[in-house]
Image 1 (tube, rainbow, N blue to C red):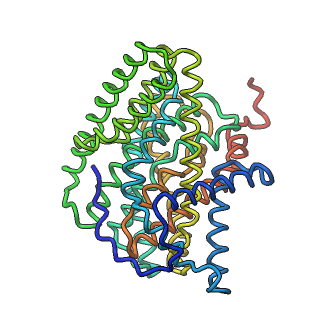
Image 2 (cartoon, rainbow, N blue to C red):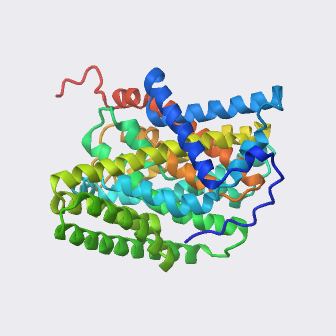
Image 3 (cartoon, helix red, strand yellow):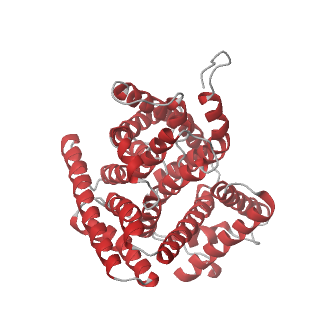
Length: 439
C-alpha cells in the first residue's frame, strides 16, 4: 500500500544555479558521497554510516553558517530548491527500499533464522506496532506539554517510520562486536523483517494523517495481515522462479541481472497487486541467499553476485546518509524542530525498552534468551537508511520539518552513541559477575 504524497506546495523561484537536471542532482550527491567516504577512510577511520551522517550534518551546518554570514556566497535556498526537485516518495519508497532490503536479505542464514523465528516474528510484527503506538502517544503528550504544534496522527507517522530497526545499520554496528550467536540472530533477524511491517504501518498512518484514508483499526489490521501473507507467497514464488532460472545457465552477468530484476520486478509487482513490496523483496532475498546462490550458482557467479549487491548496498546507504544530513538545510536550524528532535530521542528509547521487555516476558516460558538480552536488544536497535527513506518521503509541510528533525536526531543518537558504545554495553551485560566460577 502506497500513500499519496499529498499536495506539494509550489516552490519559490530560485537562482539560476539551482536549476539542475535530475542527473546533475544525483551526480552531485554521488560526488559528495565519494568525497566524504575518501576523507573518512583517509583521516577519520569511523564506521562508514556514522562518518557520512556526521559529514552530511557538518556540511549542512557549514552551508547555513556561510549563508548567514555571507549570503551572496552560497545561498541555502539554492540547495533547498535542488533537494525539493527530488520526488522522495517515488524515488525512495518505490525504488531504493527494494535494493536495500534485498541486499540485506541475501546475507541471512535461514537455519539460524528458523530456530529463532518465534521471537523474531513477535518483535517484527506486534513489537513494531506496539512501539509505533507508544512513541506516538508519548511524543504527542510531551509535545503538547511543550507547546509544539503536531497532531497525534503525525506523531503516529513518526512512530511507524522510527519503530523498525535498520538491517544495514545494525549489521554495521555488530560487525566487530562479540555478540552471542543466538542473540545476534534475534537482533539481525528482527531488523530485517520489521522493515516490511514498518513500511506498511507507515503507509497506513501517512494516509490517515494526510486525509487520504479513513480506515478503522480492525480493517487496518486485516489489511496488514493480508499484505504480509500475500507478500510472503509472492516473494517465495518469485525467488523459486529465479532459482530455476539460475540452474539453467552459468553466466554471472545474466544471473546478476536476473537478481536485479527480481528485486525491482518483485517490488513493483507487489505494489501493483496491493501487497507489501518490502516483505516480498525480503522473502525472495532470503530464499535466493539460502537456496539460489549456494545451490544454483557457480563459485565465480556467487563472487560477482555478492560483490554486486555489496556495492549497491554501500552506495545507496552512503548516499542516503549524506542526503539526510543535507536535508537539515530545510529545517533552517529553528528552535521548534530542534526541540522536537531532542524530545524524540528519549521517547523512542523508552518505547523500545518497553516493547522488548514485553516481548521477552511473553516468550520467557517458550524460548531461552541470553543474559542481558533486554538491554542489548534495546541498545542495538540502530536506526538508519530505512527510517531516513521513509522520513524523506513525507510530503512537504510543517509536519515534515518536525518529523525530519526527530528522525535525524534518533538516527544520529542511535548510530553514534549507541553504535559506538554497543560493544561496551554487550561486554558489561553479558560478562558473568566476579564471584561466578562457571565456564
